Length: 252
Image (cartoon, rainbow, N blue to C red; front, side):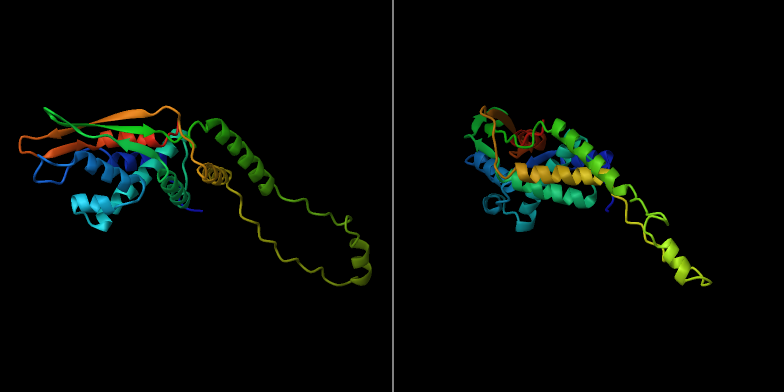
């Protein structure tokens, strides 16, 4: 079993991935398609579709792919924090795969940008995906099941006594005067880790839940303020994108 990832490490990973500002890549801002950039960024981040982002930003395939990698990793960390989970590294990799699949199904609409004094204002209308929300009670049941199964697996089976198999008298008659052979030791089976089994059950449950995406009936609008500096550069606060990340796929 691999090394378990602690809550502090998960929080650090998320903190390092967020924060700061992104500079929108353009030298001519008068006719710049800011909404097009946001659309390209979200498609790259959620749908793992990078061509538009590469066309807009001149990024490489590897650079564009990082949008999706970071978003998927953040989603996995947020999920663990929401449900107080500490998966192993192998389990975290599987969780990231589940998050990647879920994020490809999220729904969002980028509205047309509005020019304002400070730069640009854009609304992103999100219809939250709810398949992985509100699972606390279910996970408690899964943990109880995992503990019960682990306890049963780790309880040694009863060994028959010398009189239970009827061999004692027979051995005494046929082997009188002979040394009793020493049986080879039976290796103990590895103990079942109840917590690791619990996380596996959680992952199995989540994998099944995302097969048929379900969404809130009410959409949520996330506002983005794109600031234009005195030098003409456009700055996007990535914490605003994080708000979209936490809205498209709900865990609570």
